[in-house]
Length: 616
Ligand SMILES: O=C(O)[C@H](O)[C@@H](O)[C@H](O)[C@H](O)COP(=O)(O)O
Image 1 (cartoon, protein in one colour):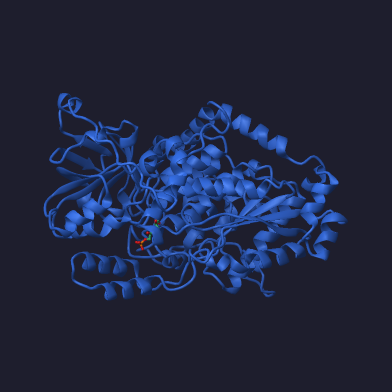
Image 2 (tube, protein in one colour; image 1 turned 180 degrees about the vertical axis):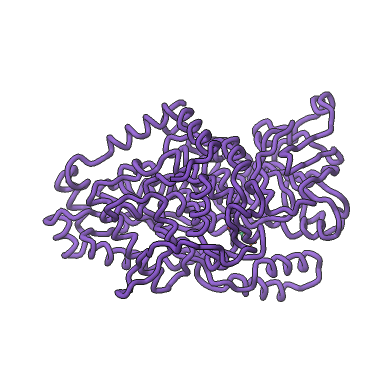
């Protein structure tokens, strides 16, 4: 067996020790919630049980009431607005049929909201986006609060939905809970061509009709957007955490194999319920470390520097940005997918996909192989992550099987996916930035080495639209550190500022040294311009970013992980903080005032949930 890398072992151990008290309380709570006796619903009095059975079809009633079959709650994030979630429309029927075959009964326990960042990018709805993660966690809890379920299946793909569902699921981890993906959109216009068209549009070289045609060729059908942004990072992380079946993440929607995988995850979850498995016994600090390693090895979305700590906290575990940074120094970058390269997730899958990636990381001792997985719930011999080296395929009956991996498996496209011995870069794609302004994160894997260090005078904006206006007015034709502040969780719910990608890139292409510093977020799809994001403390929480003025010299060095601010301490002290503009009314933003007032800082996940398991 491969020896675990000492740094991975050390980070895992420090998370375990730091989290000892909260984790113990979490596991006790999960233990207390475990049903005593055969089925969860039996603890309820007759009227309560009858309510749960009332609308069930006759056969399901017989199974639940007489045969004591397990009940599996389906929590769905279906809607027609997210192309990635549209395929979920008929999943409840598919899952219920598969569960019946496995001797269980499926019931839709509830729906959770899901919003598309691609639609709301740059518009008021985006100010609800990050908070929607916590709303989804709460909605998942409401769905599972019926308490009549012996297992659950969660249906979600996109940015806030998977983290939200997982946070909710982890509070019901006395049950076995699996995640059911739906697969990526087929490749259309490439992401690089799409981005190039946006820069041409920003430069005034093409008109509204041409840019819309370009976008419609890129976003053309159901399935997850093909770039390696937050949604696809979610998918990869779920697989490496053992919460998807092996190879399930990137099989396209509506293929025979996709449907066979969906049936199989239902069967394995039913088996988990029959065997008395729980998510709590499979999800540990090792699972969390695996998620971070996979994030780093693939240059995944910066949003996961918020989501993974928030997910860990929901399982009583404390993960810090420093843990991520420490791991980043030893985890090699093994993939190049847009925005870190030209390929998309379909190319990644064709090059060897998760099976090759996980195999490489296991062989390098960078992943914990000994984690519990949903695959193991239906297997006689637990295999842990080893099973995820295998690729799914259809057997003669049209069901899924995972043949033993080829001994000499290699990447089929070294421009997209590399072995650990020949990485794109010896270290991972994310870095913590430190300096007098506080701490921030940067995704250097998406930035060419020659652009990673920028020294320039600041131009300060309180709103991304002001930056766009200044760009359009030709005021930004110079070396520039754009400071966009008042965008943090307490100020505005931490919107993504992805609309700035095209103009900043256009300036970079004109030969200017350009960087961004913000207490807001950038999209997982943003790249090429170095961006120190998630700056904490934010302007609305006493952060010194509120004291920067136009003309101050800033130096962002992505490789060194530093953000210097030349202005003398005495000069800074004499300046007033510019208070962030309050979040506007309308688009429901007023409903989230309590969220803004109560949210925690970015390095703790920008979450409204604090100390779920008491003090550390
Ligand atoms: O974090 C992310 O991955 C993004 O928020 C993503 O979910 C969103 O859809 C982008 O806005 C689309 O990217 P493009 O605008 O580049 O197509």
